[in-house]
Image (cartoon, rainbow, N blue to C red):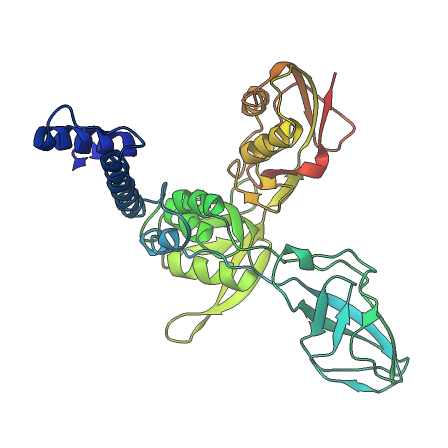
Length: 390
């Protein structure tokens, strides 16, 4: 039933009761509608199929709302918030190729870390010492392509002129497809501002930019430089994640005409007429929040209770969970509130007592709030959250 209070699905028991009542009106009150009677079986079959139809109707109704839609139906609501679901992205990096001096290596040369295959994305020529660096990209998108330095040593298509390969630094940028939870979080943030030429609109536009997980904008509306050295009538965007080109384009598309963007990063982007503009911004300083928890539990504490506590902390602070899910968490410049962190983890059933300490380096701990500067963003992950039972 759909009314001013929303959609209310009629369930199997409700439908069967109505059908049974109607059957007794037609056939008499003495008719047998028990579970094993022929009529009772038929009535229950009808009620079951009708319940399925009502369930489908409820799914159709719920698919029109961001908080309840799932999968493709949620994707189709993205344009209303000006965003698209972030697809799985392949990890990228760089390898050092050694072999015969002056040998030409075409793009597409494949190497492996054992579990993940990469290929070069540019042609290179080995120098006089027989070495050259080439950019690589994982063949299969996903966070599995993020491998540590020194692990890419296998040559997939052997070449007598190439002796060895290695990655001196780890690959990065690989991520799985954005989950429904991540998409909803980003949708709610991106919907804060509409239009352009306002602080809120610039921040909203940045949050809609692929790869950006957090953003804030600080303006200097005075006629003199501010304490941070920003020019008069300028603004500085602090951004976590994203490529310089995409961020620069977003700033150009949303900033007011004649207002100078300020920052430590600069990128040249073109407007609709093809004219070049220098856009500036600053990458946010990522503050790693270490969490040390000692907890007393009873027999209601679930088997995966420690994992649930870690996930709750990550959802509050922000960062990557053990399954690779990225949570937005706290806004840029927001302090980590000790009591709120405890409250987030205390929702796990079976906890009788708990002490929580937090810090920035994993060695200095405090049972107090953690201050975060305006150009910083708090982030954590399951590896730096330690939970132990006492």
